[in-house]
Image (cartoon, rainbow over all chains, first blue to last red; front, top):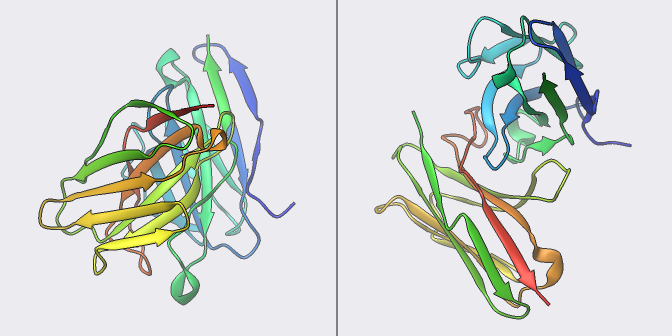
Length: 116
Length: 114
């Protein structure tokens, strides 16, 4: 199983609750991305990590969204005070970096979040 | 920032016919243009990409063309098969070896009718 792993695959929560979504990238991939995909739409960029640091978080919609990658491998996307509009599939992707980077993003199957 | 548009949003073709999907981008600094295929319940998967120093690239039944002057690029699938049915996304980025976020179009749902 060498692919990107995301858990949970499905999460149903109530408005106002806190949610954590986890991403386990491909071993050796130093770059990690979070995207959000609403029904019938393309993936929307949220945040990118190079190693442990967030290199670009310009896509996070507001301060209720936060992501960490403390050891440069697994990442957690955290959503506070969830709203119904946060309902979407949250996709994680990883890629190689530097000279071995082909540009290809390897996506997980996503975590489907439903806020009631 | 970069904006990627894609047409058509849905496309139905008979098995064996060709399918063409067209995209435009707004940022003239973009230089890397990947295409991803997404099957139901799965994450997107890269099928082909093209860089700005190349006008056309082909891989078996799939080809991409790029017109940098007009800022548009297209995906061509020949001899379509039922397993080509999926959602296809074009995307644009300012980097391949150096980082830049990949911006996706809204997608084209392709149905290949047996």
